[in-house]
Length: 172
Image (cartoon, rainbow, N blue to C red):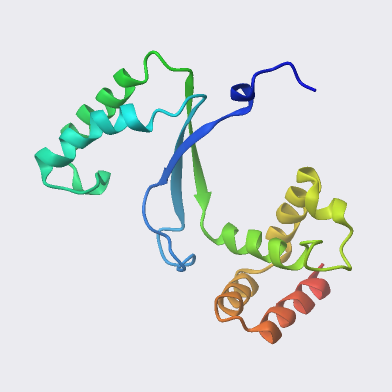
């Protein structure tokens, strides 16, 4: 048994993206950003104390950066940073190429060993192997195949998904 307190294993993540991708992975822009505050303590209540007055002042239920003037966004960001000063936290940001999400869903659909009994569990359950497969198939799948798979997936078109898998097998 671990002698570390259970709170040692707790992480709170507050994340958002720089827009709404929805189901339209292939619509411009082809990239978007995701940012996250990672904190070892739940700071939502204290952050609401910072954000709620700005919502009330602006007459908004929620704050969205695309509706704020740059000066307002900076003011709010500085207030959030000030409220986090006594916390143990970090900030992470990443840029995501939206069509890559179609490749990720391809891997989740085809190589999930819980769903596909022909797949050895190590291929899907070990991060290194799953990420390697995703990286490989991002090169194997053409943009046309990614679009075809994504459309078939959204429409629950099993024969369409199978056709993409067969094409990928040939291309591989």
